[in-house]
Amino acid sequence: MPFCQTKCTYCNFHTGVVSRDRYLPYAEAICREIVESVSANPENVDTVYFGGGTPSLLDPALLRKILGTLSSRFSSSATEVTLEADPETITPEKARAWIDAGFNRISLGAQSFSDIELQAAGRMHRRTDIFSAITKLRDAGFANISLDLIAGLPHQTRESWEESVAQVLQIRPEHLSIYMLEIDEGSRLGAESLAGGKRYGAAEIPADDSIADFYDSASARLASEGYEHYEISNWALPGMRSRHNSKYWQRKPYIGFGAGSHSFDGVKRWANIHDSARYVACVEQGTSPREQIETVSSAQALEEELFLGLRQLDGVDLERIEREYHVDLRNRIAPLADQGFLQLNGARLRLAPDRLSISNNVFVELLG
Image (cartoon, rainbow, N blue to C red; front, side):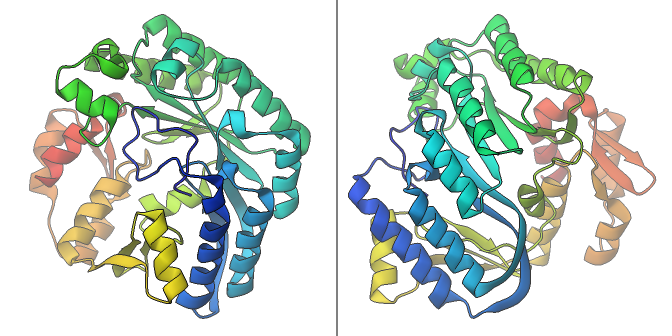
């Protein structure tokens, strides 16, 4: 759902602030796309994810309608149905309606427990809203909640970061995602930082070494509290890993609906147009909203196997990859293993645990 109440300073997604009058036509377009773009699919759908933007802004009746349309077109026994939500958008009535509609997992965009950091980032909620949202969700019956934190927000210090992690452990969600702040020209904060400016708190972004230290310290604390670190940015209590997101890292097929959504059938990737108004117009006119269709080459697939697979702490089966892609990667891997960036145990290739915070640098070297 590409709609938000406000645009966060660090956001580089194709989202926007629009009139609520746009919500109904958008939801109806999604339902029509589901019905018209695929015939009834015999394959079983076991996970559903409503991402954003802020899908919790939509009327629960519209979310229920979309879920119902999915069920009518796909063979479904969904055991994980996730809704992304912002803390300030949650009410007791909404939470109960989400449960009744079939959602059983909430991904909550907390980002920080420091009001100074939240304000600088352009977030609408404050720390008290996070605790209030958790209470409402638990009271409604949600037993699977994921929280997001961002390491590296403007004004963040070691002390404020440790406090945010402590608050997460007090709440004890079933799942936690920690993302390190990305600086790129696609966001207002990133563009300002790259230009050497001070708006949006750009001059108060922690140093890269500090951000990596925040990440490493959180990882250690979470491990001591029983959380399994299973993907570079994700931790879960035993048995509570994100089944849906794991499909992306394992290159399993998935299908997306709505503006900016992506799909993959194992051979091709495609994406819908990002602009929500254009998306709705295309669907209403009976034309395809797809703007990118690409057949994944063998070379691209190999890169994805390594880049996505190595995000998982379990790593990848190197022998399988070499066999399926008819390649020998040992010479490429050896220097990185010698330098302590990669570990090869038998056929299993992994990122070294103490190099996860600089994983992108390792990937560049490996795939370069």
